[in-house]
Amino acid sequence: MNTLNPELVATHARLQAAWRARKPDLAQRVADLRRLRGAFHARQSTMDAAIRADFGHRSAHENLIAETLIVLAEIDHCLAHLRRWSRARSAKVGWRLWPARARVRPMPVGVVGVIAPWNYPVNLALVPLVSAIAAGNHVYLKPSEHTPRTSEWLRELLADVFPGDRVAVAIGGADVGADFAALPFDHLLFTGSTAVGRKVMAAAAPNLTPVTLELGGKAPAIVCPDFEVETAAARIATGKWFNAGQTCIGVDYALVDATRRDAFVEAILAQLRARYGDLAASPDYTRIINGAQYARLSGYVEEARAAGATVIAPFGDGDAATRLLPPVLVVDPPSSLRLMREEIFGPILPVLSYATLDDAVARIASLERPLAMYPFSHARANVETLVDGTLAGGVTVNDTLLHFGAQGLPFGGIGPSGMGAIHGQAGFDTFSKLLPVFQQRRLAVTDLLRPPYSRLDRVIRWLAR
Picture 1: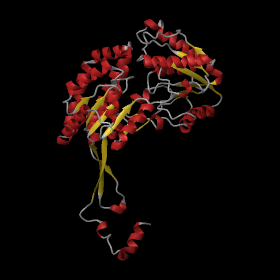
Picture 2 (picture 1 turned 30 degrees about the vertical axis):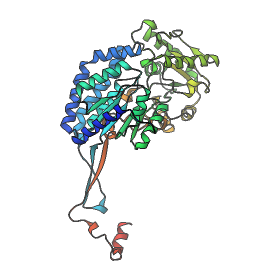
Picture 3 (picture 1 turned 135 degrees about the horizontal axis):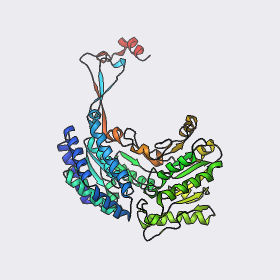
Picture 4 (picture 1 turned 60 degrees about the horizontal axis):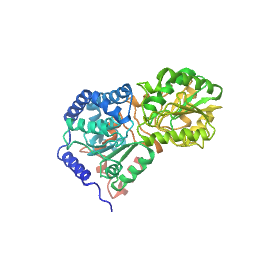
């Protein structure tokens, strides 16, 4: 039997012992979140430098939007609502149990593990951490080994904000990650690929650790015949090429009514030229995270070309040395290609034509349930057809990505795209035990419900009617 990394075991034990000795009360949680906000805000420039160094280049404005803005908004939302979320919530008991009363009391669970990915290495580490701290837990964070500078930045930030027995950070590769997932956490959140998510869930199973998985999948954008092609192209371009497509809820492929497919392709190409100009010199186009991901994505393009698919590369081929992979469109590719069977997670957009909306629904439903879906239509009937006929983790109608940033909406997948939800109150509840508390009054009807039951036969039958 393999022995877990002793440093991980010792750190987890320290976090657990400290939590049991003194659970953070509401005042402590609020103070922690305010201190985290101040420290995070003061370190934006060093965060930006660390992320750009890890990627080779990433847009400073994308860092502000996807990392800084999201994290600060999550902290502010928690601070604004934490007192209300933490209160006991009244619950009905039903007339049969009168005059008892009941409530649901949110309770912290203990030590929460967070395994964060590389694509948004700060956002996807700190947002769940904020929820776990708000709920009164201690946190053990494992950031991605693929963004080592950012991981070190996170460790320094959190060490300055929290005592080491309240929040800790584990640095290391896949071996550390495997042992981390096997620790007896009170809750474990993993964000990443479906394949690794299965391994995390298997590692957590012997401890019966509750697991929240935020995964991915092939998120479709569907342009209905009534929606303007140019507007759809602009919004889909944002949802596809933000962070060079390295986004779990990014548009994976676009479905366009057949008569306007070519017009949509031209509108997308116009958007790309207007946005990036000289791509190599553009400060706004992000690089692929590492050589392995670059090779995987380049392989998708080469396979499509070899299969005779229509491949449009408006900026030419990429540069492996700098990991610059330009945007690529693949028009009506065969379903056998890997880019149509696997999550792309990069700057390649398949554009597929459909004859009827039912055909589009059938195509989406033939694949695994995605983390996101993006219907474009002004007609409620069209949107309802798409939402009712499929099931995704979340939906943004007539735009892309934005449901992620709405703190009032739970964020999570379903099936292969994940399980459970975070953000706002959903995140607070995820990292809480919603404890049902039933309180009996001094006098109660149940005082009479005891053997011999024959004397109460009519009463019991009346209650059970």
